[in-house]
Length: 530
Image (cartoon, rainbow, N blue to C red; front, side, top):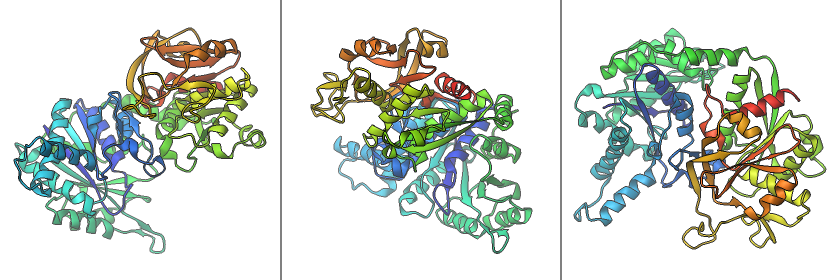
């Protein structure tokens, strides 16, 4: 097994995850089976418990894990389906250690950072790699080198080189910041030098240094980093901020990153097949027309809380040859008086899944506006549930219709908690999470898919109450998809509307740059006709 370890220095959010994904894409394009793993330094055992305002969305994997959002970048760029094993936190690792203690595996020994925690980190890395069957395991270490929380991870990956059969089994990449000082008119290498100095003091000499820059790196700056950081000049790579998510693999390929990594690992540098990827980038760059979408949500100032939805919209726009301009609209700012002014200028709406009932009334107002004005709209997860509640209130005349999540005593629980779905006997729902089959009925959604069944990812605790489905259908909202066993409603669409589709599952998680999800493609197509 070959390992690539990616660390970050100077500041957080430096681009380690995108660098890992881009490298994975380049190795994958050469025929190497590549797996990715994110090791996060926080003590939360589950990323799903993190505040999306602070940490962004939880990405749902096919096997039903709410993982770090970087897993979404990995899946989209490398075009692989990962499991929950690809996302570990300090809390999850420490839970494994505690479980071993409870089972008596430590035989009463004192549990210490070294060797017990470092051994557990190494065991996690090796287990994930072996279970994946990959040729190359890429491991991203969260946080910043020098942080106290990161030290145990750096020590663990330092030891990995001596655990492996050969010194060529490990490659270390360090991602740093090279700031541009406007008053001096030059890029500064000192932050990178100091960051590498810290990493080397912990026993790791990076093989490749990736510098995040806002200006093109000069030969002088590159040579200076090489000289003081003990690497060859060709091993200093630039990650220019103007390079987008999907342009970065091509930029890194031109600079020879994959060739360098394969050389460090003692592997053949095969011919890369990036033809389809380059064609996608050409379509993206050639787009001239723009469609304008409103994403009506609870966290308008935190786009990472809706990262997968935003990326899926861009995928669809690229496929249709248009630019997609998405404005995030605060659902809390919408009311009957402001909706016309705030929503009239958009070609289409999207109501994403949510994490709480914040702004629910505003989401329903947006659903009503789209319904009455025949504006294309796609509602997902909680957005779908609120769309149907709005229909029950205003089309069926059930003014007290609601979800039991918001009003447990509602006389008309259009959205309810099925019997046997409570968590440990509490009022909290047991999630229906991960990938599962759905059956499609006649309608716009089935025509978009072009098939009878599909596999989609879910993350919902509450379901559409079957007692109200017949009445909703009589009012025009047809049920057009159900779970494979027929037990749960999965999708509805409005008769007589160009595109008013509401789905309980989350299509954004399986959209890819080269394979956009058909529901997003249809939304963009209808937006182009507005």
